[in-house]
Length: 283
Image 1 (cartoon, rainbow, N blue to C red):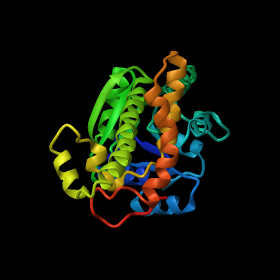
Image 2: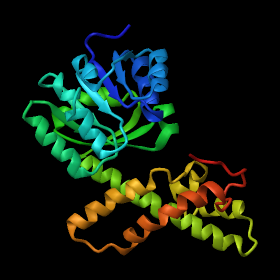
Image 3: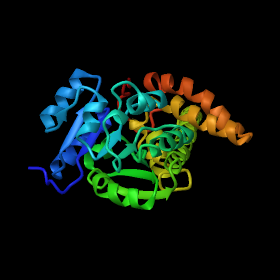
Image 4: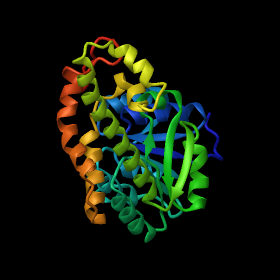
């Protein structure tokens, strides 16, 4: 049975990541209400133990902290401010936690509007991917007021083994954008390095093992089989938006934004076989 002293938690967007987070919340005694546009995901959430809301407003009505797990900036704005959105029902003093990957300016604008209703924002994108979500070892890069971070920390600690407070609202998304930029720089580099190495006839698996012990190591190389480039273009569009607003010329960043478009196809169809395993098809 859920402990009534705990904050009531809502999740809007119970996809692959959100459903895993939900499982950890329920197992730690939190009462959770979920809203998702997919009937399949709603059914899965119900099986795990969540109550189901038809709309974000239904979730907001019964939640003290609502975690957003939607995919894009316009969806963040829609579930917060749109018809049947969270702001129609959430009480003053409640928290909306943006765990979607979004532009820093989007989250700052959301926080500014919500301040008029005395609703707080936790800027809380998450890293390490779906398997870390399963094991409860996600990294949360958070931005927000210290007291908001402190209140939400027990909730996030159910599925994140590491929670790093980077600064104000928006700084969580900055941290996520830089993390993802470095991920895709490394991942694109591995496509090219792998192709070049293969042309020499070297054993790519043995080379990978050696590189993982040296300065060529990276998480992209370590987790090569799980790299799919599915969200790479979105990530790089966020970085490009930040670059333009800062008035910076970052040629490597610009090149990576273009290269990830083709990289997704290459990784799905004919990537360098760094691990020696059968190729995996990604959606």
